[in-house]
Image 1 (cartoon, rainbow, N blue to C red):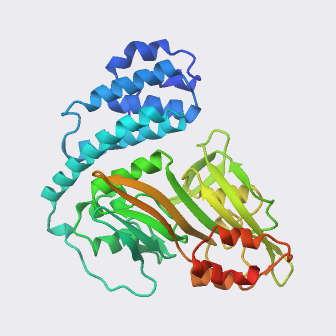
Image 2: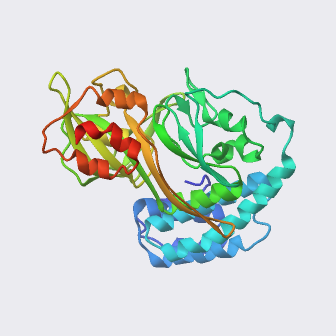
Image 3: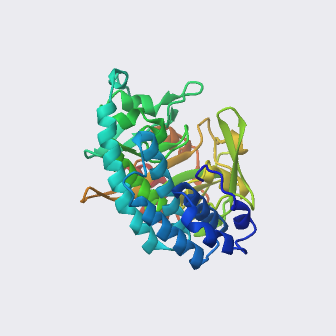
Length: 392
């Protein structure tokens, strides 16, 4: 949500029943206030075309003003509001309106690249450090975006609690781009993975690349698939876990999410389920999942709410058939980007890391009739199929 004071916010919280004051003052609202209105309507799923069309028209007019953003901080504020509008109108199924913001966002991003290049200083010089077997790796890249493999125990961001290592510092050591030092742009990282989650991670080298990718994420045009191991015998797929989540900070830097009817929309699709058991005849389930939203700890909170916490996830009540981290791997990322008129399509998969493969070696299929082969068909990479062949 865009941070701003909105005198009429109570109107929205009352379910949008009194829209006359909003329409009366629409031409007085700033872009941030319009973002707030759209965010509220999107969150509350209030489909009022009169108000929403007015928000779209007013915001489009404001974005034509060349003086709407001043400096890098001002540009960040405008870009954040545009993304808020994109997500709200997407959630309200107003795709035609969303496309009007793409051009404005790309022009703004190009200006930010130019401003940040001029502002580069000695403190942003790369500090080289040696990679090791546990370091991230670049899988694909172009001048604007790179697709990375994030190992477990790496934090996406600048803070590194405990023994975790920082993806931001790793990127800074290999980058001459200002975005790598910009916390307002998450140091270039387009999305996040939890510290113990391994897998595919998208990182931008320029603001043009960053906001092109963020537009697709906020426009729900990204496919993110995960492999998870959870306790118990999960019900058969396909099914959708549609439970709103509320995230709270329980200690400095430590958050937890829980199902709350007043929380944010959170959708997790369970595509395939393989039922397994360990040597103690305890039941486990291997899941292939797709995220449709990106809430904090979404898969972990949803599975725990269903009574099937992830293996190794002590924070959400999980145990493990063998010592391991949280058993969660981001194995597929699909996104189509258009950056400065050039298309760059990503549809990549990442093999399950050795530490999680070792956990699976402790388990057996529940029965020969189990549908393990259908799960493997969703993991097209030959390396993944080879590692899972014992379940066929």
